[in-house]
Image 1 (cartoon, rainbow, N blue to C red):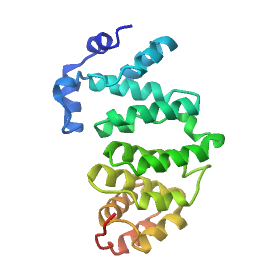
Image 2: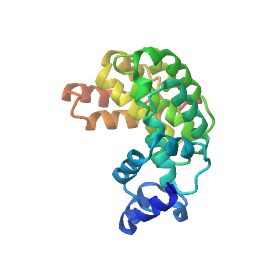
Image 3: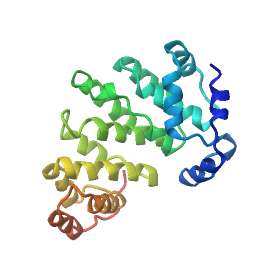
Image 4: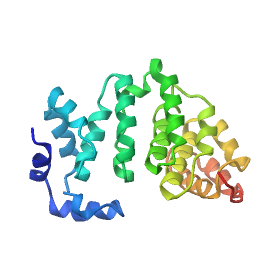
Length: 230
C-alpha cells in the first residue's frame, strides 16, 4: 500500500481549512485535511507487514502520516515494542494533535505499570516539548485509576513551562481532582503548582460535570501561587 497516495485520496479541502486553525504553527504545505476516523479506518485496512514497514519510515512528510503513525503505535499489543516505537517516534512529533493521538492501550495493563511509569518519568524530563507533553499524557491515561501511585502527582507538578506543557499538566490535575481529590487538592492548597498550571487546572475542574459545586467553590477560593522556576 502506498500510504501517502491513500491519504491524498482521502483529503478534504474544507476540513483542511478547519483543522489548520486547531493546530497553529504547523507547516500548511504538509497538511492534507484527512479526518481522524478515515485515518483510523486506513490503519485497519493495513496488514501487519504494511504497518511494520510504515513504522520504519521516519520522518514522514505529511501531518496525516504522523497521525497514522500514532494510531498504529497505539494499537500495538506488546508493551516492550510499543515503548520502543513511542520512544523512536517522539522526537519527530512537532504539534499537540499528533502528540495527543499517541495512547497505547497496553501501557495501562497492570503487569506493565512500573516500567511504563519509569519511561513516562523520563519522557517528562525531556527538553523536547512534545516528548515531555506525552510523558504527562501517559501518566494521566494510565496512573490515575487502577495503577495509581501518588508520586505521579509530584512528577507532573514539577513538569511545566510553556502553553502546551502547562495545558497537559492542567488536564492531568483536573483528572486527578476528579479521581484522587484528597491527594490532588493538597497540591493546590500548598501552592505546589506553577501559577499557570494552577489557574488552568482550576478552570478545567470548574468546567467538569464530575466535580461538585462545593468543591468548585473551594478550588476558586484557593490563592494562586507565586511564579517559580522549574
